[in-house]
Image (tube, rainbow, N blue to C red; front, side):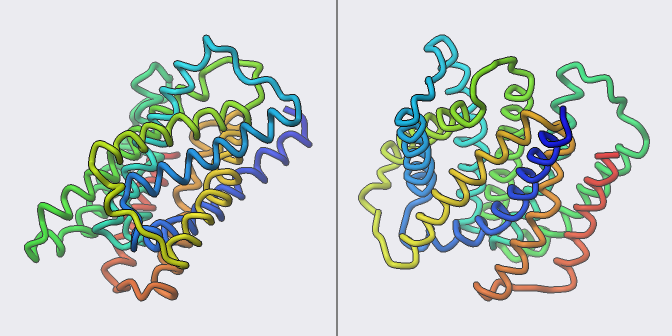
Length: 291
């Protein structure tokens, strides 16, 4: 990779860190009046459709039909599971706490890479990292479990980890998929297909009957579509194409810092020394796994 291409790849990674750190608060605001699956459906289908229309106007060819099944699968994993699980969790959990739980995505990425044949060994340092990270997550959610909200909180926490698993599998498949196609065009297809899956889930759950908009929720949804999806996911797809998976996954260490600060300052989400210690343990554990 040339120096210029390397600079572009790392610039895309920085954009992912900054943009996706803000989307956790935007998701929480959108959920004030928009049901969870429809938040994702409208965000991703709109973003994918706009990008595909723009590329078509510029004369950029779409992927061949034989590639669409794999791109649809990637959309389901990255968008349907990856983003859908996060949105579902934020119905119950504060945005900052959700971001901290999703910070385990590097562990899932490295685990999937290892399970799929990567040569990295499961060293003592990584085992210690897994234990430290797990203890951090336990410290994050234990008080809520003890207060009687266990089932609801447990489902939300499980949703974040299912999101991480889907994201890790999708990222690994996308990274290993050899193709000369325009990475931004394929990202647009993934957005659109993933959004359609979430739309189908929203229809099955009867969410249209509960759909409403306010200036706040509508503005948050527009922000998610433009900055979180069009800009953020395109930047992620580009970085993933040109940088190692483990390097790209480190965006998950930056997102919680932004999400917790915004959630505390703008949404009045609770902040406590326990949250700080638990968050530090999660990030430290994942850093050990990364090395």
